[in-house]
Length: 232
Image (tube, rainbow, N blue to C red; front, side, top):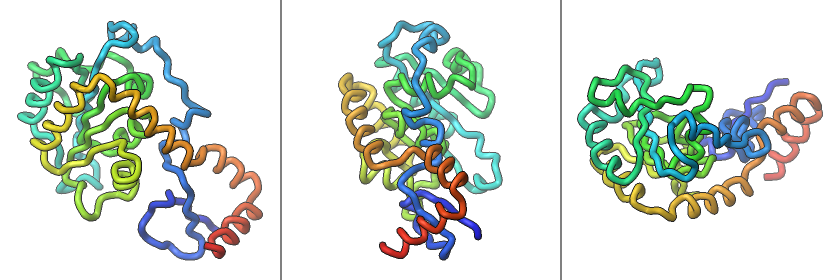
């Protein structure tokens, strides 16, 4: 007996062994049962708790699944900094080396602290994928821009935008930059997103707890899931 486990929003039906659950893979490590943000990251950022900052995260688009994919151009990156810097401290996390003019914005915190840094951010603007979901489940306003966005976009991004209102996805950089500029000016936005996150967490399960129980009670756990599936 085998099992294929995906989020409940996954569009395809992969057959009898396919189990859909109300969660995302990012909730395996960012569910509040397992993750608590550490305010010591403000020291790394040389900021005081409560200081307003935004994270720009840029993809290298050099993976196999990124063939023919693209996000923000270098000109767009400069445009983002110009738009956001008057209203918040700007930090950049980039998979490719930054040009000299953007080097001063490079995120000083270690990679192992990225989720703590992300959690306290006022806004994330990104052209990559996973961190957009991570920010959303942490309750961080997120603007996502790449040419994955469209009618065949991944189900988690559609759900996070249409059902929970936690992210905004665009395939045009100018529209994404305008939305980021709008959001960075809103000083009340983190409280609003915290409420949206509460709704999300109420609907989703702790993926780590589910997987531990599923594995430890196998194959009974699989039989139970198949029974539930048959009742739907």
